[in-house]
Length: 526
Image (cartoon, rainbow, N blue to C red):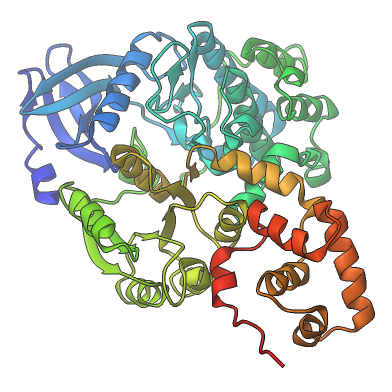
């Protein structure tokens, strides 16, 4: 594949765009430095990889359609769209400069100058009913003259456009995702305002307001945890600027700035009246952290990763389903199935041995289940992404899998093209949760005041298996008084009046798993 990319150098697309050099690549496209021989200017050429699925191709053209509607000095310009040499391509503005990440942290004056430009560019897009949906430093560049350029409209969505992503799925960069994105809700322009608020917070403090290794914890932080006041981290931040940033991070959309231009005005009001954030403002370049060639690799790449071949291990005890999916993945140019496993122990061994890019893990398998081995997989193969692909949508399975370190959770009913898209997004460090999964996570954790403890769950599991209280007490190594108090607490939490009804309710609601019940030995008769 790499040699094929190299053969594009020196080619001319449609007798106009000469391909000069390879800049970068993502899961679905390659970006080249090009030369528009007709107008005599440098351009960036984004070439779609061959044999991508329809959903990816649709999103590629969706990006073109979104960008074509926008003509703003702070938004990367689309020049042309075409097809030649059996390749679809976009010709876009070549942007020289640093990623906004190079400006983290910055002094308040610089935060306002750059933030106001970003906000006004977003307002322009929002007025044309374009929502970006993935505002983050990696998608924003700053030219040597201090001009902001918003890039990567690959997730941008006109409100009336047909969705490529299934309703209820969560797609976005976890650290910058809005509460409504985290819950899989319908989005409007205010999701971009929240994400920009995260960016501003990071710029003034040097750190993110919400950060967790666990996907569930990060989702919940966005949904319900207030952002720490920036002045607690950086006391020199003007109070007015802190107020503006915290307003953008309101959990409820109706409490944020209702338009991005109001946010821009509010930002500028936090500094002396003589300060300018417009195009004439001079902004010093950050320290030269990287070489020019390295900086160019960030240009228009689909993802932060740059993988050419996606190496996969599959674990599922359903042989026909597993082999059918493996065969489908092998038809894709950028996928390689390294191995298959039929139980959890095999999945662990294959993953540790082969170190794939991603493990597709079923949860219900004989012997050690996917849930049993997931913590060991994350411990022994920390660089391997784990995407759960299961038929179970029970709350207990979802929560246990994500808390054990899974990077995403999909049901086996997921369309094949959406599965490919989900794999690529997980590899790009994005959250991908199947339809309805996000809502189960949020509602489940929000109700954790009534959640069963591990010991209470074990007691109910034994009740369901036919154990008496005295036998349970001995197995859990607790006193009879503790046993009585625990059963009273369980019945209160589950709103039932007897132990057997409590066990049935726990099974029905997913507090205990049927697989665990089957593995528990029945009590010995006296």
